[in-house]
Image 1 (cartoon, rainbow, N blue to C red):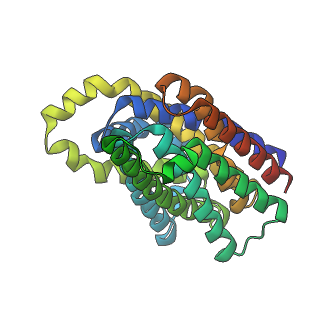
Image 2: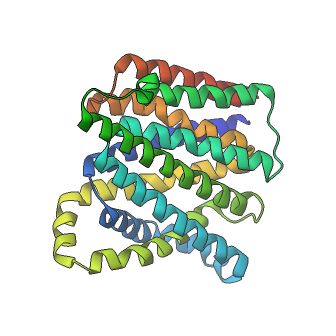
Length: 293
């Protein structure tokens, strides 16, 4: 992994952790996903127009197919993530989502796309996944909680986290192929996907405009923050994929858990502090191994 790719991933991880904390605090649903996508579409329109005015008209069915597929997968990912945040703790949903996603995407990159990974890189993946597991609660996740309500909440967190991770792996592979093989602009892949997301989510808002308006008044600040910073994080990751193999970039993204452990754990008061710190250290070691491998 090049130093440039490594730096891009570190910055993206910090941004990613921050916007997920904002999304958790918003407590939104599919309508919140619509708010963020609509704001993204408007806020980033000048940059999208500038970069796409000569490129987008040349896209064919393949390029548009990947944009549509990316938009569909991102909608499913975001809606499931938000639902998980409403029904369970961020310190369960987020780590499991971030841990299972790169594991699956790296497996696809190695087995399907033919990428190779060194022994040190494999150790790095193991460190990242192990650290995420510790942050999520470690062995305690596998034991039944004494409180039935708490047990159910943890189980829901595990289910939503793993399902979110599957969609993370899916859109990582689709978007990675678009920027690495088709050489599409990372910024345009992400920006044009907003039109797909807005179109898919608009019916949810239009079914009950009055409730959507109430939610907007309560959540617009969080939606604005997510809309402005989240594309930056993901585009940095897509650029990193141009510099390094997907099988290295995908797990290294989980450096965001280091920031989530230090920032989110303090703000939300969730989980065991010692386990989070140990998990964060494992992730830091794993990311370092990936960078060297």
